Image (cartoon, rainbow, N blue to C red):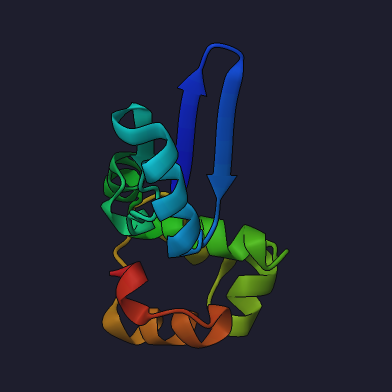
Length: 119
């Protein structure tokens, strides 16, 4: 919660958990000139428009590339870990091949995320 009081030459700002007795005192002194702003409204990142837009653009292949790079792995290193050819990993990342449920589970174990991120 933030309390803001603006008068000529006066701007009082208090942030955080403000004791009720201070709020009562300010209301008593400043009356209807007091403006109280409640800033304790939080929004989940998943509900934010920019996240929804980004999430819609993330294909399984882009997700795979993101997590591979985050783990500082080359396509060859990931291919060796999966027991497949490097070209197969390249095809997955570029959307030329679909990621199977079995591969999604393998990838999830490697990158420690949910397999659904790759489907």
